[in-house]
Length: 421
Image (cartoon, rainbow, N blue to C red; front, side, top):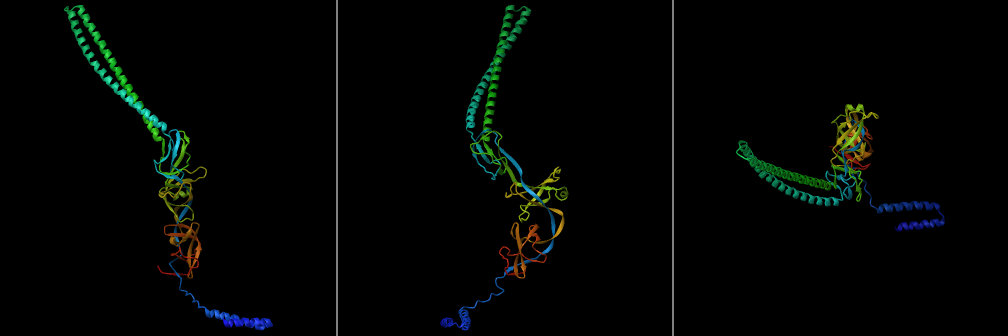
């Protein structure tokens, strides 16, 4: 360091003397000296070996393969069943227990109406029913007594009839007087009148009993209707599904039959497509299908052709077809668009790669290709696929070495080492 300072002082003196040649020479010497001292003062950085930091990967050569040809159709999802939610009685809304998009079960309470008047009427009708039942029991007792009261006049009539018959026979033989006959006849008429009166009383008691029974029936019917109204003051879901179209608020007064919303059954759910007459050769009932939310999506939902319209639409000349999807997790929602793929009767040749080699997200997929020991990130467009392989429409050529492992951690340009399976 002392030698360097001396050289600097020499340069300054040279400047003063305007000896430019010496300045240049000295400056060059200083640079060489300083650089040399700096080099000598530092440790030499070792060169990185070419064998370090290599990522071990497995590759597969991209080749043409036979792929089942599939036809893709634009699809929209719709509920497999809809249940309208409405009220059966008029009333003021006191509670609303659901929101649009909420999943509900059949019988689940959705809203409640004010039931104060109904409960008060139930109490009044219960009292009327109790009174009617008491009056019926009293009428039954009177009817029983009246019926028993018919028995004695009946016996008396039979006795008076026998007496009259005997007196009449004696009178005809001259053994009884006319007075005896008239007395016997008078007793007979009296007994007949007493029996008729007893029967009339018994009939009146029976009618009274029937009337009281009718009163009980009326009171019971009114009470049943009120209890039904009480039940209808609680509005429940007609079926299981997802709530849509909510149109009810607390404090709102509802008339009977008001539309309060809908319950849409989404498990299963239908993917609806339009097919041409030429598609009917392979689109048939029971045929398996795949539904995707996007044309470039790797997520598929299994479905089966559930129904096909018997006649084409007279305007568009297409047949409406419904694909049933289980949708047990409820992730698919009505109104969402996607696509349905159905296998045709034809096959085609295409470049394929293992599903595990694909990285990225929908619309932005890529693979890594082994490019002479370096991972080259290559954007791709995918086509048809199954659970193991994917058709690659663009981005990969036949013979490319596609990396199948460590895809999630690789970076473009990483040094790779191919290992055997």
